[in-house]
Length: 107
Image 1 (cartoon, rainbow, N blue to C red):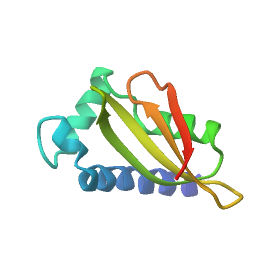
Image 2 (cartoon, rainbow, N blue to C red; image 1 turned 90 degrees about the horizontal axis):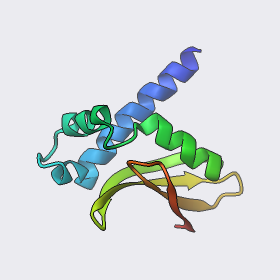
Image 3 (cartoon, rainbow, N blue to C red; image 1 turned 90 degrees about the vertical axis):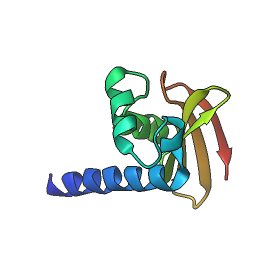
Image 4 (spheres, one colour; image 1 turned 30 degrees about the vertical axis):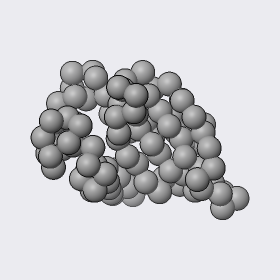
């Protein structure tokens, strides 16, 4: 139980760090402010990270390496890099609003 809590804390911190590094906050109108993304999640514009990770891992089982939230063709998408059990790195692109898997490709 404690292990799950630490893992979720790690993922939350990783999420914020990746968003800061990727510049995704700029797409929400304020640079370096993860609160804008949290507000978009509360408004239902963007699915929360745990849901996205669940969708990605169901499609590509493995370990999450990186998560980015970007604007692509006018819509927000999550890009999740996964390390598969056989050692491949795959990128799962997911519509941030609907959760639809858009692409799965080798990275």
